[in-house]
Length: 126
Image (cartoon, rainbow, N blue to C red; front, side, top):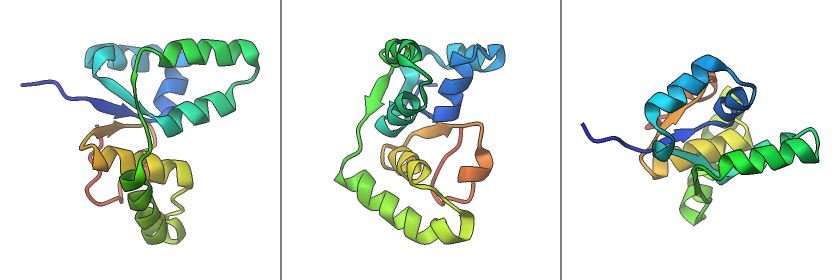
């Protein structure tokens, strides 16, 4: 079976940075070279950094991964997801963009917040 890229949600990276051994083991079993991050995840991580030292550590860590940028296709799909799910399921903007990235690039999404995503049609969760 050929390995495929996995899109990792922000909460997974946060758990790795908190030294969560279970999540670190899962990341290792996937393989760092098979992990991608949405540029939205990178933005959320930078925004959430407590200080410049932590920001520096986060920047160093995310260098290891492929970063998938938001493009017009992803933006339009995220708009559709917001229209469909923001009021019924409280879908927020970052999650809509991450889900749209996952769907448009045919990647499974690895997240700890299954409830935030499981109702989205065509989204494959890891």
